[in-house]
Length: 191
Image 1 (spheres, rainbow, N blue to C red):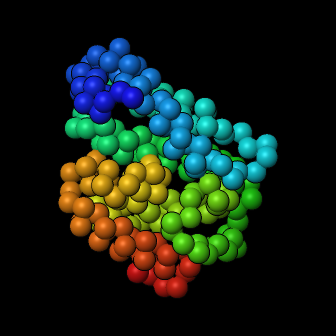
Image 2 (cartoon, rainbow, N blue to C red):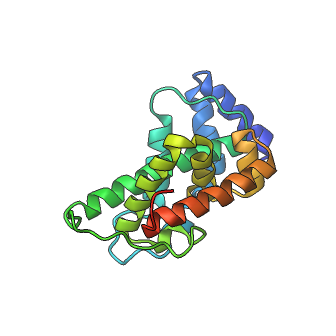
């Protein structure tokens, strides 16, 4: 297995404009990104047009467009990739749900924020994204923790590394964000 230092060095070269370094780094972590994508899409309905390969490839295209963001570590890159995957999943869900959603649409309760995103239908993905945007408006760090943990599949330790914050802060933010999102998605009043 390729060391995290090699991937980090390649990603840092990519941030300085070395497109080959970005391609090499992405190839080295491709399997891990596929694992994250596979976990997110595992329970999708038959005939679903977005598959693991498509999600990873779309992430590659988005991350490789323009300038590559500055990356401090391998975990930091996974946080960036998880944001890209979240946006792709939400855009896909919005397109799929656009014809079905009306003004009378009822919010579907979320039993637990720990349930993988692949267990949700398109409406739940859209609702979660909207709630996450509201959370980011008053606590951006908590929203980043949710993106890393929920959409990126990062552990608490990897999230702390990716966001350059302490493990206790991640645990505290994760608990607060989960509670707030649960209330938001249940419709039990504004948090």
